[in-house]
Length: 228
Image (tube, rainbow, N blue to C red; front, top):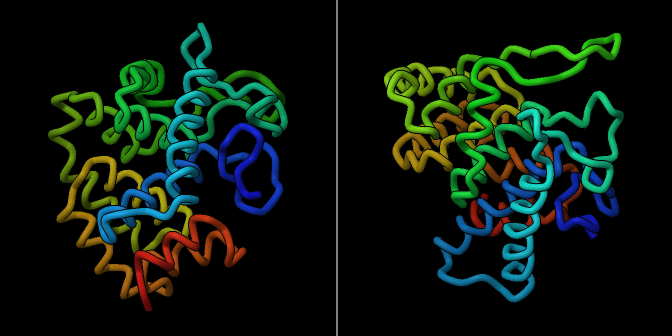
């Protein structure tokens, strides 16, 4: 099974408590919705996994709230070392994206405590704030309807276009998540076209390069959406 005991998706089979399970699960949800839009229906297994993933991802996000404002995953969701239990950049992006899409109420909370930096630990185990990339500052603010952040969305668009050429597969998949969350159909079309000029020609190839196992659920859905 690729879904762990918490209903979150791992990068390999039978991996419990994946480091970026929150992000991988959101990608599965988005792929299932993309396939549903294309075919008009989903098979029984995909439908089950899709509904489970949405519910379990929402539960994981709400369960990781900390009274001090940050998000940290308990051992029951996350098996990494203590310094990695803070929501990583990738997971934080997935969390605010899913919260926005599902109206969980965490979008404003995540932005409030992570406007320009996120919590983490330095090499000595002391708490520190890790600066956010300007792209994430704009993205988090825009999802919250911040007027200034929305004025900088053209810069976000430019950074996204550049990253499609310069980023690896992980960066490309984060762009996929951000643009799909913003529902920018035209931007999605542009970055999809730009993939032709990279070593990963389609989104199917991006997912296949990142998730090495052919039977990974994200690869299976991607293969049904984007044909070679």
